Length: 105
Image (cartoon, rainbow, N blue to C red; front, top):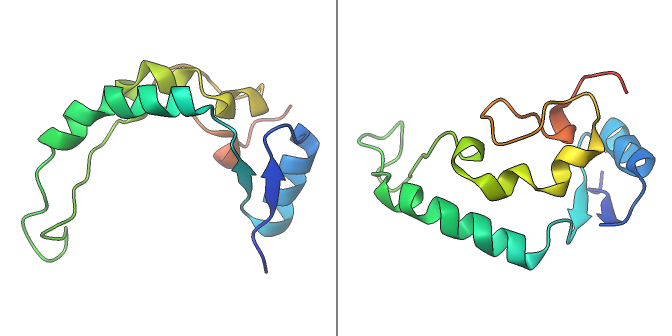
């Protein structure tokens, strides 16, 4: 099955249908470049401070940085939070993107 690709202005119903039917979807250019740049800047110090894993299981060259949503104010303004009125929004680590939301509309 091919991954559905939608434009940023696609209706919520189209995104929901793609998620139901294919289990995933790509929404092209959903987040403006300026917002992506800002989030990258906010997270850069945390990513740089994360050491690589120390064994084969965690990967000697793999870096795992947690709580990224909580560390970025910019992520709280991402359009991903507007898709689901039942999900919490903001910069909390428990924020649920629409792709994992199970709240009724």
